[in-house]
Length: 141
Image 1 (tube, helix red, strand yellow):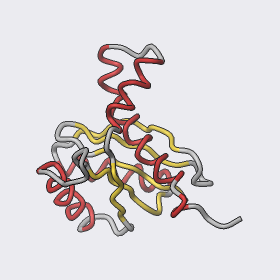
Image 2: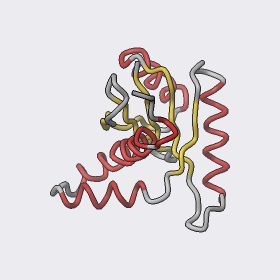
Image 3: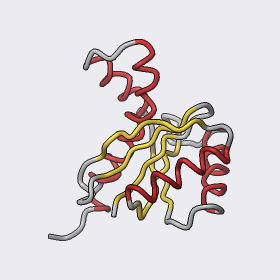
């Protein structure tokens, strides 16, 4: 029973999943955005293998809190997922998640192609961890 996060991108979709206790986010990797049918097939495999019960999608916002054209693309993406995958989907503010992912990977000595391949999954893990850490999502002890 895990939560899966997606960092939406036009080329790659970063994927992360929680542990079974829903306390820690772990980067899984990325799925190519195109073709959509291939993306959906790979996503469904991960959902089945990891026993995912909920999906979190990063919602891009401008620094002043407004939504721009990228947010509309994410809304369309979520509608597409909803029509193929019967799980609850929640949007989470993703401001600066990619910046944090780049910084974290650089601090850990990841460079070049490996960094480009890891940043999307790292951003998804940051989005998911912020969701897991949110007081609104904590369960009573």
